[in-house]
Amino acid sequence: MIPVMAGYWRAAVEACGRGRLIRLQVTDLIGALSEAMVLALLIPLVRVLAGAGTTEVPGLGWRLTAGVSTGALLGAVALRALTQWYSTVSASSIKLATTNHLRLRALRNVLHSDWQHLARQRRSDIVQATTTEIERADAALGMLLRLGVQTLMTLATAAVGLAISPLLGGIAMAALLLVVAITGRSVRSTLRLGLEWGRRNAIFGATVTDSLSSLRLIRAHDAADEWSDMLREAADAGRRIEKRYVEIGAGLQAALGIAGVVAAVALVLIGHGLGLGVAPLLALAVVTSRLLGTARSLLQSVQAFAQLAPALEGVERISREAAAHVDPATGHPTPPSPGPPPVIELRSLSAGYAVEPAVRDLSLVIEPGAFVVVSGPSGAGKSTLLDVLLCLLAPSAGAFLVDGAPVTDVTAWRAQIGYVPQQTVLVPATVRQNLTWSTHAPTTDEQLWQALEDAEVAGAVRALPDGLDTELQDFTQLSGGEQQRLCIARALVRSPRVLVLDEATSALDVPTENAVLERLRARGCTIVMATHRPGVIETAEQRIDLLP
Ligand code: ADP
Image (cartoon, rainbow, N blue to C red):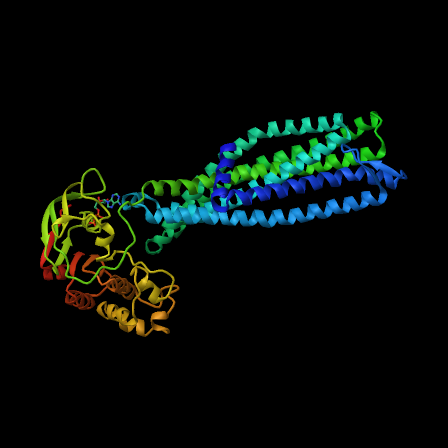
Protein backbone atom coordinates (compact mmCIF):
# COMPACT_ATOMS: atom_id res chain seq x y z
CA MET A 1 0.00 0.00 0.00
CA ILE A 2 2.77 2.43 0.98
CA PRO A 3 4.65 2.08 -2.36
CA VAL A 4 1.38 2.68 -4.22
CA MET A 5 0.77 5.84 -2.17
CA ALA A 6 4.35 6.94 -2.83
CA GLY A 7 3.74 6.54 -6.58
CA TYR A 8 0.80 8.95 -6.41
CA TRP A 9 2.77 11.39 -4.29
CA ARG A 10 5.67 11.37 -6.79
CA ALA A 11 3.27 11.95 -9.68
CA ALA A 12 1.65 14.89 -7.85
CA VAL A 13 5.07 16.39 -7.01
CA GLU A 14 6.12 16.10 -10.67
CA ALA A 15 2.97 17.81 -11.86
CA CYS A 16 2.48 20.51 -9.22
CA GLY A 17 5.77 20.87 -7.35
CA ARG A 18 6.49 19.93 -3.74
CA GLY A 19 5.56 23.43 -2.49
CA ARG A 20 1.92 23.17 -3.44
CA LEU A 21 1.56 19.79 -1.79
CA ILE A 22 3.26 20.97 1.38
CA ARG A 23 0.95 24.03 1.48
CA LEU A 24 -2.00 21.65 1.29
CA GLN A 25 -0.61 19.51 4.11
CA VAL A 26 0.00 22.59 6.28
CA THR A 27 -3.57 23.78 5.63
CA ASP A 28 -4.87 20.36 6.58
CA LEU A 29 -2.79 20.46 9.75
CA ILE A 30 -4.25 23.87 10.68
CA GLY A 31 -7.71 22.46 9.90
CA ALA A 32 -7.07 19.48 12.20
CA LEU A 33 -5.79 21.75 14.99
CA SER A 34 -8.86 23.97 14.69
CA GLU A 35 -11.04 20.85 14.82
CA ALA A 36 -9.26 19.79 18.01
CA MET A 37 -9.69 23.33 19.36
CA VAL A 38 -13.45 23.22 18.72
CA LEU A 39 -13.75 19.96 20.61
CA ALA A 40 -11.49 21.05 23.47
CA LEU A 41 -13.42 24.31 23.88
CA LEU A 42 -16.68 22.43 24.37
CA ILE A 43 -15.75 21.57 27.99
CA PRO A 44 -15.13 25.15 29.24
CA LEU A 45 -18.23 26.32 27.39
CA VAL A 46 -20.48 23.67 28.98
CA ARG A 47 -18.94 24.36 32.41
CA VAL A 48 -19.37 28.12 32.07
CA LEU A 49 -22.93 27.66 30.86
CA ALA A 50 -23.50 25.40 33.90
CA GLY A 51 -22.55 28.32 36.16
CA ALA A 52 -18.76 28.25 36.63
CA GLY A 53 -17.16 31.74 36.39
CA THR A 54 -14.05 30.64 34.52
CA THR A 55 -12.91 27.23 33.44
CA GLU A 56 -9.88 25.44 32.03
CA VAL A 57 -9.25 24.09 28.52
CA PRO A 58 -8.20 20.43 28.86
CA GLY A 59 -4.61 19.70 27.99
CA LEU A 60 -3.63 23.38 27.66
CA GLY A 61 -4.40 24.72 31.14
CA TRP A 62 -5.84 28.07 29.87
CA ARG A 63 -8.54 29.60 32.08
CA LEU A 64 -11.34 31.14 30.05
CA THR A 65 -14.44 33.23 30.80
CA ALA A 66 -17.83 32.62 29.10
CA GLY A 67 -17.27 35.39 26.55
CA VAL A 68 -13.73 34.30 25.70
CA SER A 69 -14.60 30.61 25.37
CA THR A 70 -17.61 31.39 23.13
CA GLY A 71 -15.48 33.75 20.99
CA ALA A 72 -12.64 31.24 20.79
CA LEU A 73 -15.07 28.48 19.81
CA LEU A 74 -16.57 30.59 17.03
CA GLY A 75 -13.08 31.57 15.85
CA ALA A 76 -11.99 27.92 15.75
CA VAL A 77 -15.16 26.96 13.84
CA ALA A 78 -14.52 29.75 11.28
CA LEU A 79 -10.87 28.74 10.90
CA ARG A 80 -11.85 25.12 10.38
CA ALA A 81 -14.42 26.11 7.71
CA LEU A 82 -11.84 28.31 5.94
CA THR A 83 -9.16 25.61 5.89
CA GLN A 84 -11.71 23.04 4.68
CA TRP A 85 -12.65 25.33 1.79
CA TYR A 86 -9.02 25.98 0.81
CA SER A 87 -8.11 22.33 1.19
CA THR A 88 -10.99 21.17 -1.04
CA VAL A 89 -10.19 23.69 -3.80
CA SER A 90 -6.43 23.09 -3.65
CA ALA A 91 -6.75 19.28 -3.54
CA SER A 92 -9.04 19.36 -6.55
CA SER A 93 -6.67 21.49 -8.62
CA ILE A 94 -3.68 19.28 -7.63
CA LYS A 95 -5.69 16.23 -8.64
CA LEU A 96 -6.66 17.68 -12.03
CA ALA A 97 -3.14 18.93 -12.80
CA THR A 98 -1.60 15.57 -11.85
CA THR A 99 -3.89 13.37 -13.92
CA ASN A 100 -3.72 15.74 -16.88
CA HIS A 101 0.10 15.58 -16.66
CA LEU A 102 0.06 11.76 -16.48
CA ARG A 103 -2.38 11.41 -19.37
CA LEU A 104 -0.55 13.81 -21.68
CA ARG A 105 2.85 12.33 -20.79
CA ALA A 106 1.61 8.81 -21.57
CA LEU A 107 0.17 9.94 -24.91
CA ARG A 108 3.29 11.95 -25.78
CA ASN A 109 5.51 8.94 -25.01
CA VAL A 110 3.30 6.67 -27.08
CA LEU A 111 3.36 9.08 -30.02
CA HIS A 112 7.17 9.31 -29.84
CA SER A 113 7.88 5.60 -29.45
CA ASP A 114 9.31 3.53 -32.26
CA TRP A 115 7.05 1.73 -34.69
CA GLN A 116 8.09 -1.79 -33.72
CA HIS A 117 6.94 -1.10 -30.16
CA LEU A 118 3.75 0.65 -31.29
CA ALA A 119 2.83 -2.15 -33.68
CA ARG A 120 2.78 -4.60 -30.75
CA GLN A 121 0.40 -2.50 -28.64
CA ARG A 122 -3.30 -3.21 -28.35
CA ARG A 123 -4.93 0.10 -29.32
CA SER A 124 -7.75 -0.32 -26.83
CA ASP A 125 -5.19 -0.64 -23.97
CA ILE A 126 -3.85 2.82 -24.79
CA VAL A 127 -7.38 4.24 -25.07
CA GLN A 128 -8.37 2.55 -21.81
CA ALA A 129 -5.27 3.77 -19.94
CA THR A 130 -5.65 7.38 -21.07
CA THR A 131 -9.42 7.57 -20.51
CA THR A 132 -10.97 5.16 -17.99
CA GLU A 133 -7.86 4.25 -16.02
CA ILE A 134 -6.72 7.85 -15.72
CA GLU A 135 -10.17 8.76 -14.36
CA ARG A 136 -9.76 6.02 -11.74
CA ALA A 137 -6.27 7.30 -10.91
CA ASP A 138 -7.79 10.79 -10.59
CA ALA A 139 -10.37 9.51 -8.08
CA ALA A 140 -7.62 7.57 -6.24
CA LEU A 141 -5.50 10.69 -5.88
CA GLY A 142 -8.56 12.56 -4.57
CA MET A 143 -8.99 9.81 -1.98
CA LEU A 144 -5.31 9.93 -1.04
CA LEU A 145 -5.42 13.69 -0.48
CA ARG A 146 -8.57 13.26 1.61
CA LEU A 147 -6.80 10.51 3.55
CA GLY A 148 -4.24 13.09 4.69
CA VAL A 149 -6.96 15.38 6.10
CA GLN A 150 -8.88 12.53 7.66
CA THR A 151 -5.79 11.07 9.34
CA LEU A 152 -4.92 14.45 10.84
CA MET A 153 -8.54 14.98 11.95
CA THR A 154 -8.61 11.53 13.57
CA LEU A 155 -5.32 12.17 15.37
CA ALA A 156 -6.48 15.62 16.54
CA THR A 157 -9.75 14.20 17.85
CA ALA A 158 -7.90 11.36 19.60
CA ALA A 159 -5.52 13.92 21.17
CA VAL A 160 -8.49 15.80 22.65
CA GLY A 161 -9.81 12.50 24.02
CA LEU A 162 -6.42 11.93 25.66
CA ALA A 163 -6.44 15.46 27.10
CA ILE A 164 -9.90 14.96 28.64
CA SER A 165 -8.99 11.62 30.17
CA PRO A 166 -5.67 9.96 29.42
CA LEU A 167 -7.04 6.56 30.44
CA LEU A 168 -10.25 6.72 28.40
CA GLY A 169 -8.61 8.48 25.46
CA GLY A 170 -5.89 5.82 25.53
CA ILE A 171 -8.49 3.03 25.44
CA ALA A 172 -10.26 4.75 22.50
CA MET A 173 -6.95 5.10 20.65
CA ALA A 174 -6.03 1.47 21.30
CA ALA A 175 -9.45 0.35 20.00
CA LEU A 176 -8.92 2.47 16.90
CA LEU A 177 -5.48 0.97 16.24
CA LEU A 178 -6.95 -2.50 16.67
CA VAL A 179 -9.59 -1.73 14.04
CA VAL A 180 -6.90 -0.38 11.66
CA ALA A 181 -4.82 -3.56 12.13
CA ILE A 182 -7.84 -5.78 11.49
CA THR A 183 -8.85 -3.85 8.35
CA GLY A 184 -5.29 -4.06 6.93
CA ARG A 185 -6.02 -7.47 5.43
CA SER A 186 -9.21 -6.35 3.76
CA VAL A 187 -7.35 -3.33 2.32
CA ARG A 188 -4.77 -5.64 0.76
CA SER A 189 -7.48 -7.81 -0.77
CA THR A 190 -9.21 -4.66 -2.07
CA LEU A 191 -5.89 -3.67 -3.69
CA ARG A 192 -5.82 -7.06 -5.44
CA LEU A 193 -9.44 -6.58 -6.52
CA GLY A 194 -8.50 -3.16 -7.93
CA LEU A 195 -5.73 -4.75 -10.01
CA GLU A 196 -8.09 -7.40 -11.33
CA TRP A 197 -10.73 -4.74 -11.99
CA GLY A 198 -8.25 -2.81 -14.17
CA ARG A 199 -7.40 -5.98 -16.11
CA ARG A 200 -11.08 -6.78 -16.64
CA ASN A 201 -11.73 -3.23 -17.72
CA ALA A 202 -8.98 -3.53 -20.34
CA ILE A 203 -10.56 -6.74 -21.68
CA PHE A 204 -13.97 -5.09 -21.77
CA GLY A 205 -12.50 -2.04 -23.56
CA ALA A 206 -10.82 -4.31 -26.13
CA THR A 207 -14.08 -6.19 -26.73
CA VAL A 208 -16.01 -2.93 -27.21
CA THR A 209 -13.32 -1.53 -29.54
CA ASP A 210 -13.26 -4.75 -31.56
CA SER A 211 -17.02 -4.85 -31.80
CA LEU A 212 -17.18 -1.22 -32.96
CA SER A 213 -14.59 -1.84 -35.66
CA SER A 214 -16.44 -4.99 -36.74
CA LEU A 215 -19.93 -3.47 -37.00
CA ARG A 216 -20.23 -4.16 -40.71
CA LEU A 217 -19.22 -7.80 -40.26
CA ILE A 218 -21.49 -8.27 -37.24
CA ARG A 219 -24.47 -6.93 -39.16
CA ALA A 220 -23.62 -8.89 -42.30
CA HIS A 221 -23.37 -12.17 -40.34
CA ASP A 222 -26.39 -11.25 -38.19
CA ALA A 223 -24.24 -11.95 -35.14
CA ALA A 224 -25.44 -9.07 -32.95
CA ASP A 225 -26.71 -11.44 -30.23
CA GLU A 226 -23.42 -13.36 -30.09
CA TRP A 227 -21.46 -10.12 -29.74
CA SER A 228 -23.89 -8.88 -27.09
CA ASP A 229 -23.22 -12.12 -25.18
CA MET A 230 -19.46 -11.61 -25.45
CA LEU A 231 -19.83 -8.04 -24.20
CA ARG A 232 -22.09 -9.18 -21.36
CA GLU A 233 -19.53 -11.79 -20.27
CA ALA A 234 -16.76 -9.19 -20.27
CA ALA A 235 -18.94 -6.72 -18.34
CA ASP A 236 -20.13 -9.39 -15.85
CA ALA A 237 -16.56 -10.24 -14.87
CA GLY A 238 -16.02 -6.59 -13.90
CA ARG A 239 -19.34 -6.40 -12.10
CA ARG A 240 -18.54 -9.44 -9.96
CA ILE A 241 -15.35 -7.73 -8.78
CA GLU A 242 -17.21 -4.52 -7.99
CA LYS A 243 -19.82 -6.49 -6.04
CA ARG A 244 -17.08 -8.19 -3.99
CA TYR A 245 -15.52 -4.78 -3.28
CA VAL A 246 -18.85 -3.35 -2.11
CA GLU A 247 -19.44 -6.41 0.10
CA ILE A 248 -16.06 -6.03 1.81
CA GLY A 249 -16.57 -2.28 2.29
CA ALA A 250 -20.14 -2.62 3.59
CA GLY A 251 -19.14 -5.40 6.00
CA LEU A 252 -16.33 -3.26 7.40
CA GLN A 253 -18.55 -0.24 7.82
CA ALA A 254 -21.26 -2.24 9.57
CA ALA A 255 -18.75 -3.84 11.96
CA LEU A 256 -17.19 -0.48 12.68
CA GLY A 257 -20.61 1.08 13.29
CA ILE A 258 -21.51 -1.52 15.95
CA ALA A 259 -18.05 -1.49 17.54
CA GLY A 260 -18.13 2.30 17.67
CA VAL A 261 -21.45 2.57 19.49
CA VAL A 262 -20.42 -0.13 21.98
CA ALA A 263 -17.09 1.65 22.57
CA ALA A 264 -18.77 5.07 23.02
CA VAL A 265 -21.29 3.73 25.58
CA ALA A 266 -18.58 1.74 27.39
CA LEU A 267 -16.27 4.77 27.60
CA VAL A 268 -19.02 7.01 29.00
CA LEU A 269 -19.99 4.34 31.54
CA ILE A 270 -16.36 3.83 32.61
CA GLY A 271 -15.93 7.61 32.79
CA HIS A 272 -19.04 7.88 34.97
CA GLY A 273 -17.66 5.10 37.18
CA LEU A 274 -14.37 7.01 37.48
CA GLY A 275 -16.29 10.05 38.68
CA LEU A 276 -15.89 12.37 35.67
CA GLY A 277 -18.20 15.41 35.70
CA VAL A 278 -21.04 16.10 33.23
CA ALA A 279 -19.00 18.49 31.07
CA PRO A 280 -16.04 16.14 30.45
CA LEU A 281 -18.44 13.21 30.01
CA LEU A 282 -20.44 15.17 27.45
CA ALA A 283 -17.24 16.26 25.66
CA LEU A 284 -15.97 12.68 25.80
CA ALA A 285 -19.20 11.45 24.18
CA VAL A 286 -18.85 14.10 21.44
CA VAL A 287 -15.15 13.28 20.97
CA THR A 288 -15.86 9.54 20.78
CA SER A 289 -18.62 9.96 18.21
CA ARG A 290 -16.41 12.36 16.17
CA LEU A 291 -13.57 9.88 16.41
CA LEU A 292 -15.90 7.21 15.17
CA GLY A 293 -17.10 9.41 12.29
CA THR A 294 -13.61 10.39 11.12
CA ALA A 295 -12.32 6.84 11.56
CA ARG A 296 -15.19 5.49 9.47
CA SER A 297 -14.67 7.95 6.65
CA LEU A 298 -10.91 7.34 6.91
CA LEU A 299 -11.42 3.62 6.42
CA GLN A 300 -13.91 4.28 3.62
CA SER A 301 -11.28 6.41 1.85
CA VAL A 302 -8.61 3.75 2.41
CA GLN A 303 -10.88 1.11 0.89
CA ALA A 304 -11.80 3.32 -2.07
CA PHE A 305 -8.14 4.26 -2.57
CA ALA A 306 -7.10 0.59 -2.50
CA GLN A 307 -9.68 -0.25 -5.15
CA LEU A 308 -8.81 2.65 -7.46
CA ALA A 309 -5.06 2.94 -6.85
CA PRO A 310 -3.79 0.19 -9.21
CA ALA A 311 -5.06 2.33 -12.12
CA LEU A 312 -1.96 4.54 -11.86
CA GLU A 313 0.31 1.58 -12.61
CA GLY A 314 -1.75 0.84 -15.73
CA VAL A 315 -1.20 4.38 -17.05
CA GLU A 316 2.44 4.54 -15.95
CA ARG A 317 3.23 1.14 -17.52
CA ILE A 318 2.07 2.30 -20.94
CA SER A 319 3.99 5.55 -20.47
CA ARG A 320 7.18 3.84 -19.19
CA GLU A 321 7.26 1.18 -21.88
CA ALA A 322 6.71 3.76 -24.59
CA ALA A 323 9.46 5.98 -23.10
CA ALA A 324 11.83 2.99 -23.12
CA HIS A 325 11.21 2.66 -26.87
CA VAL A 326 11.53 6.29 -27.88
CA ASP A 327 12.32 6.47 -31.59
CA PRO A 328 15.87 7.86 -31.41
CA ALA A 329 15.82 8.72 -35.09
CA THR A 330 13.04 11.31 -34.99
CA GLY A 331 13.81 15.00 -34.71
CA HIS A 332 12.03 18.25 -35.52
CA PRO A 333 10.76 17.93 -39.08
CA THR A 334 11.32 20.77 -41.51
CA PRO A 335 9.92 20.79 -45.02
CA PRO A 336 12.53 19.67 -47.59
CA SER A 337 13.88 22.15 -50.10
CA PRO A 338 12.55 21.50 -53.62
CA GLY A 339 14.60 19.04 -55.63
CA PRO A 340 14.42 15.91 -57.75
CA PRO A 341 13.41 12.56 -56.23
CA PRO A 342 16.33 10.44 -54.97
CA VAL A 343 17.56 7.10 -56.28
CA ILE A 344 16.29 4.39 -53.96
CA GLU A 345 18.09 1.07 -53.79
CA LEU A 346 17.15 -2.18 -52.07
CA ARG A 347 20.25 -4.38 -51.91
CA SER A 348 19.64 -8.06 -50.96
CA LEU A 349 17.15 -6.72 -48.46
CA SER A 350 15.29 -8.89 -45.94
CA ALA A 351 12.88 -7.51 -43.35
CA GLY A 352 9.94 -8.55 -41.20
CA TYR A 353 8.28 -8.41 -37.82
CA ALA A 354 8.63 -12.12 -37.07
CA VAL A 355 11.83 -14.19 -36.83
CA GLU A 356 11.19 -15.39 -40.39
CA PRO A 357 11.33 -12.20 -42.53
CA ALA A 358 8.28 -11.44 -44.70
CA VAL A 359 10.49 -9.77 -47.37
CA ARG A 360 13.45 -11.92 -48.41
CA ASP A 361 16.58 -11.07 -50.36
CA LEU A 362 15.06 -8.31 -52.48
CA SER A 363 17.25 -6.26 -54.81
CA LEU A 364 16.03 -3.33 -56.88
CA VAL A 365 17.03 0.18 -57.97
CA ILE A 366 14.14 2.65 -58.16
CA GLU A 367 14.97 5.48 -60.55
CA PRO A 368 13.82 9.05 -59.71
CA GLY A 369 10.22 9.64 -60.80
CA ALA A 370 9.49 5.94 -61.41
CA PHE A 371 6.09 4.38 -60.81
CA VAL A 372 6.74 1.15 -58.87
CA VAL A 373 4.05 -1.33 -57.97
CA VAL A 374 4.40 -3.78 -55.07
CA SER A 375 2.05 -6.72 -55.49
CA GLY A 376 1.51 -10.14 -54.00
CA PRO A 377 -1.11 -11.98 -51.97
CA SER A 378 -2.26 -10.83 -48.58
CA GLY A 379 0.45 -11.35 -45.95
CA ALA A 380 3.22 -11.49 -48.58
CA GLY A 381 4.97 -8.49 -47.02
CA LYS A 382 3.79 -5.48 -49.07
CA SER A 383 3.14 -3.27 -46.03
CA THR A 384 6.33 -4.57 -44.42
CA LEU A 385 8.36 -3.40 -47.42
CA LEU A 386 6.68 0.02 -47.30
CA ASP A 387 7.53 0.18 -43.56
CA VAL A 388 11.21 -0.24 -44.53
CA LEU A 389 10.90 2.63 -47.02
CA LEU A 390 9.35 4.78 -44.29
CA CYS A 391 12.21 3.82 -41.93
CA LEU A 392 9.66 2.40 -39.49
CA LEU A 393 11.36 -0.99 -39.72
CA ALA A 394 15.06 -1.64 -40.15
CA PRO A 395 16.18 -4.38 -42.58
CA SER A 396 17.20 -7.62 -40.88
CA ALA A 397 19.72 -8.23 -43.69
CA GLY A 398 20.97 -6.36 -46.76
CA ALA A 399 20.63 -2.61 -47.19
CA PHE A 400 18.15 0.16 -47.94
CA LEU A 401 19.99 3.03 -49.64
CA VAL A 402 18.89 6.53 -50.65
CA ASP A 403 21.16 8.23 -53.21
CA GLY A 404 23.71 5.47 -52.57
CA ALA A 405 23.88 5.75 -48.77
CA PRO A 406 21.96 4.34 -45.81
CA VAL A 407 19.49 6.80 -44.27
CA THR A 408 21.12 8.47 -41.29
CA ASP A 409 18.77 11.46 -40.87
CA VAL A 410 15.40 9.70 -40.67
CA THR A 411 13.50 12.96 -40.09
CA ALA A 412 14.95 14.56 -43.21
CA TRP A 413 14.16 11.40 -45.22
CA ARG A 414 10.57 11.20 -43.97
CA ALA A 415 10.11 14.89 -44.78
CA GLN A 416 10.52 13.93 -48.44
CA ILE A 417 7.80 11.29 -48.28
CA GLY A 418 4.03 11.47 -48.65
CA TYR A 419 2.43 8.31 -47.24
CA VAL A 420 -1.16 7.15 -47.63
CA PRO A 421 -2.06 4.08 -45.51
CA GLN A 422 -4.74 1.50 -46.22
CA GLN A 423 -7.08 2.88 -43.57
CA THR A 424 -8.63 6.28 -44.05
CA VAL A 425 -7.29 8.58 -41.33
CA LEU A 426 -9.45 11.65 -40.77
CA VAL A 427 -9.82 13.59 -37.53
CA PRO A 428 -12.97 15.41 -36.39
CA ALA A 429 -11.77 18.86 -37.51
CA THR A 430 -12.02 21.04 -40.62
CA VAL A 431 -10.97 19.89 -44.08
CA ARG A 432 -8.10 22.40 -43.85
CA GLN A 433 -6.89 20.97 -40.54
CA ASN A 434 -7.10 17.45 -41.95
CA LEU A 435 -4.95 18.50 -44.88
CA THR A 436 -2.34 20.48 -42.99
CA TRP A 437 -1.59 18.71 -39.69
CA SER A 438 1.42 16.95 -41.19
CA THR A 439 2.90 19.75 -43.32
CA HIS A 440 5.15 21.31 -40.59
CA ALA A 441 4.99 24.61 -42.55
CA PRO A 442 2.40 27.24 -43.46
CA THR A 443 0.42 26.32 -46.56
CA THR A 444 -1.52 28.55 -48.91
CA ASP A 445 -5.08 27.88 -50.11
CA GLU A 446 -3.61 27.60 -53.58
CA GLN A 447 -1.40 24.67 -52.50
CA LEU A 448 -4.34 23.00 -50.79
CA TRP A 449 -6.59 23.33 -53.84
CA GLN A 450 -3.80 22.06 -56.10
CA ALA A 451 -3.43 18.95 -53.90
CA LEU A 452 -7.21 18.48 -53.89
CA GLU A 453 -7.31 18.81 -57.69
CA ASP A 454 -4.52 16.23 -58.07
CA ALA A 455 -6.37 13.86 -55.78
CA GLU A 456 -9.56 14.41 -57.83
CA VAL A 457 -11.50 15.54 -54.76
CA ALA A 458 -11.59 19.33 -55.22
CA GLY A 459 -15.19 19.20 -56.55
CA ALA A 460 -16.41 17.33 -53.46
CA VAL A 461 -14.71 19.83 -51.11
CA ARG A 462 -16.09 22.81 -53.08
CA ALA A 463 -19.59 21.34 -52.63
CA LEU A 464 -19.22 21.31 -48.83
CA PRO A 465 -21.04 24.19 -47.06
CA ASP A 466 -17.83 25.95 -45.92
CA GLY A 467 -15.37 24.49 -48.41
CA LEU A 468 -11.95 24.05 -46.79
CA ASP A 469 -13.33 25.27 -43.46
CA THR A 470 -16.12 22.72 -43.24
CA GLU A 471 -16.01 20.75 -40.00
CA LEU A 472 -15.83 17.01 -40.72
CA GLN A 473 -17.66 15.86 -37.63
CA ASP A 474 -19.13 12.49 -38.56
CA PHE A 475 -17.45 12.19 -41.99
CA THR A 476 -20.82 11.42 -43.61
CA GLN A 477 -20.52 14.56 -45.76
CA LEU A 478 -17.99 12.64 -47.88
CA SER A 479 -18.24 9.16 -49.43
CA GLY A 480 -15.65 6.47 -48.62
CA GLY A 481 -13.86 7.15 -51.92
CA GLU A 482 -13.83 10.94 -51.32
CA GLN A 483 -12.41 10.42 -47.83
CA GLN A 484 -9.64 8.24 -49.28
CA ARG A 485 -8.84 10.90 -51.89
CA LEU A 486 -8.74 13.53 -49.13
CA CYS A 487 -6.06 11.38 -47.47
CA ILE A 488 -4.13 11.32 -50.77
CA ALA A 489 -4.45 15.13 -50.94
CA ARG A 490 -3.00 15.35 -47.41
CA ALA A 491 0.09 13.45 -48.59
CA LEU A 492 0.39 15.75 -51.63
CA VAL A 493 0.25 18.93 -49.52
CA ARG A 494 3.66 17.85 -48.17
CA SER A 495 5.07 18.28 -51.72
CA PRO A 496 6.65 14.83 -51.53
CA ARG A 497 9.50 13.64 -53.70
CA VAL A 498 8.45 10.07 -52.97
CA LEU A 499 4.81 8.97 -52.64
CA VAL A 500 4.23 5.73 -50.73
CA LEU A 501 0.71 4.40 -51.28
CA ASP A 502 -0.50 1.32 -49.40
CA GLU A 503 -3.60 0.16 -51.28
CA ALA A 504 -4.57 3.81 -51.04
CA THR A 505 -6.99 3.73 -53.97
CA SER A 506 -8.89 0.59 -52.93
CA ALA A 507 -12.14 2.51 -52.37
CA LEU A 508 -12.04 4.16 -55.83
CA ASP A 509 -13.69 2.92 -59.01
CA VAL A 510 -11.31 2.10 -61.85
CA PRO A 511 -11.86 5.32 -63.93
CA THR A 512 -11.36 7.53 -60.83
CA GLU A 513 -8.32 5.50 -59.78
CA ASN A 514 -6.82 5.91 -63.27
CA ALA A 515 -7.51 9.65 -63.23
CA VAL A 516 -5.90 10.06 -59.79
CA LEU A 517 -2.83 7.99 -60.75
CA GLU A 518 -2.39 9.94 -63.98
CA ARG A 519 -2.33 13.22 -62.05
CA LEU A 520 0.02 11.81 -59.41
CA ARG A 521 2.47 10.59 -62.08
CA ALA A 522 2.33 13.98 -63.77
CA ARG A 523 3.77 15.54 -60.58
CA GLY A 524 7.12 13.85 -61.32
CA CYS A 525 7.62 12.29 -57.91
CA THR A 526 8.60 8.65 -57.40
CA ILE A 527 5.55 6.54 -56.58
CA VAL A 528 5.77 3.23 -54.71
CA MET A 529 2.34 1.68 -54.53
CA ALA A 530 1.13 -1.57 -52.97
CA THR A 531 -1.87 -2.78 -54.92
CA HIS A 532 -3.78 -5.84 -56.11
CA ARG A 533 -5.37 -4.21 -59.15
CA PRO A 534 -4.16 -5.82 -62.42
CA GLY A 535 -4.96 -2.64 -64.41
CA VAL A 536 -2.60 -0.60 -62.22
CA ILE A 537 0.09 -3.30 -62.07
CA GLU A 538 0.24 -3.37 -65.89
CA THR A 539 0.93 0.37 -66.14
CA ALA A 540 3.87 0.33 -63.71
CA GLU A 541 7.45 0.92 -64.86
CA GLN A 542 8.83 -1.41 -62.22
CA ARG A 543 7.15 -4.29 -60.39
CA ILE A 544 8.00 -5.98 -57.12
CA ASP A 545 6.11 -9.27 -56.87
CA LEU A 546 6.28 -10.60 -53.34
CA LEU A 547 5.64 -14.29 -52.78
CA PRO A 548 3.72 -15.61 -49.78
P1 ADP B 1 0.68 -7.55 -46.82
O1 ADP B 1 0.78 -6.05 -46.74
O2 ADP B 1 1.27 -8.09 -48.07
O3 ADP B 1 -0.71 -8.05 -46.61
P2 ADP B 1 2.15 -7.50 -44.37
O4 ADP B 1 3.42 -6.81 -44.69
O5 ADP B 1 1.09 -6.72 -43.69
O6 ADP B 1 1.56 -8.19 -45.68
O7 ADP B 1 2.46 -8.76 -43.46
C1 ADP B 1 3.53 -9.63 -43.73
C2 ADP B 1 3.70 -10.56 -42.53
O8 ADP B 1 4.16 -9.80 -41.43
C3 ADP B 1 2.40 -11.21 -42.10
O9 ADP B 1 2.69 -12.54 -41.72
C4 ADP B 1 1.97 -10.39 -40.91
O10 ADP B 1 1.28 -11.21 -39.99
C5 ADP B 1 3.29 -9.93 -40.33
N1 ADP B 1 3.15 -8.58 -39.72
C6 ADP B 1 2.79 -7.47 -40.36
N2 ADP B 1 2.78 -6.41 -39.51
C7 ADP B 1 3.14 -6.92 -38.30
C8 ADP B 1 3.33 -6.37 -37.01
N3 ADP B 1 3.14 -5.08 -36.76
N4 ADP B 1 3.68 -7.21 -36.00
C9 ADP B 1 3.87 -8.51 -36.22
N5 ADP B 1 3.74 -9.10 -37.41
C10 ADP B 1 3.38 -8.32 -38.45
